[in-house]
Amino acid sequence: MRVLVTGATGLVGQELVKQLHAENIDVNYLTTSRDKIKSEANYQGFYWNPRKNEIDQNCFDGVSAIINLAGASVGKPWTDVHKQALIDSRLNTIDLLKSSLQNKDHHIDHFISASAIGIYESDYRILHDEDSTVLSDNFLGELVKKWETKTEEMSELGMEISLVRTGLVLSEKGGALEQMLKPIQNYVGAVLGSGKQWQSWVHIEDIAGIYVHLLKSKLEGVFNAVSPNPSTNKELTFEISKIIDKPIILPPVPEFAIKLLLGERSTLVLSSHMVSAKKIQTAGYHFKFVQIKAALEDVLSHQK
Ligand SMILES: NC(=O)c1ccc[n+]([C@@H]2O[C@H](COP(=O)([O-])OP(=O)(O)OC[C@H]3O[C@@H](n4cnc5c(N)ncnc54)[C@H](OP(=O)(O)O)[C@@H]3O)[C@@H](O)[C@H]2O)c1
Image 1 (cartoon, rainbow, N blue to C red):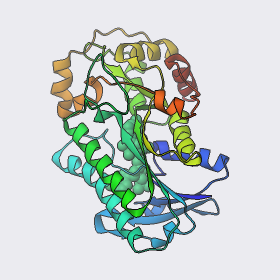
Image 2 (image 1 turned 90 degrees about the vertical axis):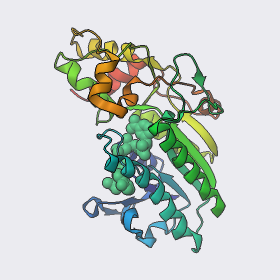
Image 3 (image 1 turned 60 degrees about the vertical axis):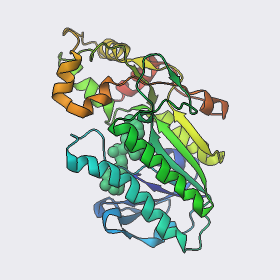
């Protein structure tokens, strides 16, 4: 089997490629950087530039499914220019894949795309399952809605569609955990706001494992990709502090200060998302990491 992966060079993509290879699944991947192109029997890179509608059509050769992870990072400051890039890098990419395949002979019957739990309304009490209609109308929520709608359009090509509503990915290689870890390591870490906001996390091996499971079991539909036990910001902060043995000495950072510092992007750390993992578990996925302590111990042990 051979799959085409977009965003394969990113945080999730690298772990996904590792797991696909372990299952003897070959990977073609699209990258926007020519210097990231490798040419190996089971890992073949192809160039694309969605802004200019450029794509190497050979990327589809022998492929039976697409896993779509491409998207500019939400971690960078949300200037007007970057906000547009966040949208374009998720919508133009899918448009380009669709228009390329429209008049082409191919055997691709499954399109699996990243999505995010930021689609759900921030709330301290609601446990969001995939049928939740309580959706967010902030920038991130609207971005994810547009992204999912665009993804669904791939069904017009006769493909099954899967949407992976991803939580906070815990990895030693970067992402949100790195941002939380650095201040704690330097004794300037603190709980953010009330600390009561739910942060539904997922270990990097599990997020990649979920993609592989959806692919191999040909599961279509919307799936939350979060561990079964979400943590609050306070729990996460203190758990990291205990594991790396650096006490939290500062008081919580007040919400207004975070808003002043991060502006609209403060929703990334202040929003509360308690999200259910029941559907993916019922669909046969067995999480490797279900408790925050074990997940953090594993991820942080790779750091030392
Ligand atoms: N990590 C999380 O906590 C998290 C949470 C929720 C949702 N997600 C979503 O899951 C997906 C994978 O996450 P990740 O953490 O692996 O992201 P990442 O490390 O930022 O990697 C995303 C990849 O997308 C490609 N990309 C960046 N800008 C692009 C553009 N303008 N046009 C086309 N491709 C572009 C890059 O690949 P090339 O340089 O090779 O082109 C990059 O390696 C993302 O779409 C992200 O929004 C992640």
